[in-house]
Amino acid sequence: MLHLTLAPKSFLREEATCRNLNVMIQLFHLTKVHPSGVKVLDDAFFSAPSGSFAVVLGESRTGKSTFLKMLCGEEKPTSGTLLVDHQEIHKIPVSQKKKWLTEVGLILPDLGLFPEKTVEENILFPLQVKGATLDEGRESLLSLLEWVGLQSKAKSNPGDLSSGEQRVVTALRAMAFRPKLLLADEPFQGVDEKAVDVLLRFLGQLHREGTTIVLATQQARVVEKIKDSLKEVPVEWVQLRDGKLLALEVADA
Image (cartoon, rainbow, N blue to C red):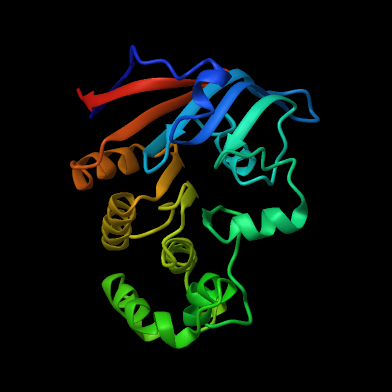
């Protein structure tokens, strides 16, 4: 069993103080109101240093998915300041945003695989966007697929995979090109335990290489897995509740 308590730490609340620090994500007085009138974020503060690993916890429909979509520029805040990689990504030109997104790995429930491409082609697609050839990443890709038990599916199309296998491929696609920023929304939902262990090891490796990671989940088993598998990683635990992002201490009960 896990025990969650509010931590004494508070996120940086002065924009002028934070802008010049080595911080990947910074938000100040951020509010997001859905058209329905529901407030997802309400005058919220948050900061994530470059190379940090943050896990955002929250019940279903508390706004975790919307928060991650804001961090990649898919959703716009209603008010306040949101800086990702020192820029207000929801305000930059489309061409500039597309270039920036080549450095961002996304694991989102509604971000599916390309149905006409094979598993191999799907995973290597971000590398191709950055100018690499399929041959340049194929060897390491086959090793990854072997680790998660999908080596025989490299030439298969997504439609031939189970939903859990598709989730694994989506995760590998987001991580294989070593992104600068990785945003993961319930990345292990429907994924078997062996694949979860492999993906967590990969996340730990990315963290050691300097990737900033923000992972959102409501699953207790994921929290337990992270604590057990990534003991060497200084994870920042955050709770999204009542429109606020609150620092947490997570310990065994």
